[in-house]
Image (cartoon, rainbow, N blue to C red; front, side, top):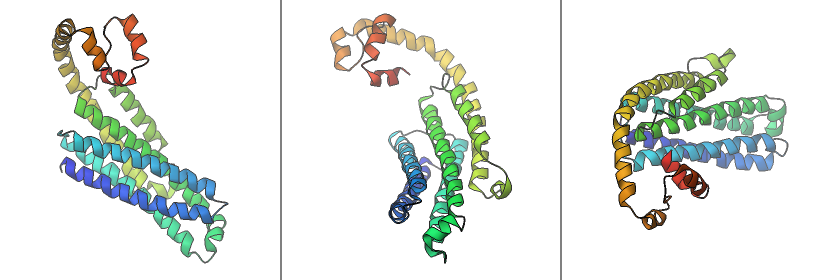
Length: 252
């Protein structure tokens, strides 16, 4: 597997999300009683779509080599997300072809309950994609020491939110598959932490020396032209950073 297969999976998932979102828009117009529930699902789908595009753009613009295990986990999460989207689409088809009618199926045929489950599952999978995006960014930048603890905590909390009871505990269910991928990603993140702590420790002194030399050689006017603070004094820098959010990102 190479990064291209991940980007193709992202495009496929975005296409499916767009198709379902478009269908939901028509359903919202027809089902006034269900509009609030369906609009919530539509918002989750659009948020998921943005995360997927961000993931794709990182893998396209950054010519990086992801660890094989991480690639496999990302593809697994994308596949699980696609299953949730397909399930939502199937549920809407059931509404459209029900003998009870759309309104009758929604209130009497279990349609509302099914959509509530889909929304819950969609929220969890969107969170998994957000964690995946962070994990990919960390893997590329190698800046993992300060971020790993937060990522691991989010994975643990997300894993606890996954219901594993009744019919949703089947091995083929998207939630079950997602939980496995999160557990694997959790282990991978710990591995990256141990590897990068040594890397960061060895290189930190060299980086500090390079930054000191650069600061000494660069005039203050040049810093301002790049949007950087003209001083490294914490008291002055903190005041400057309030108005320079992009620099805060670079420092982090």
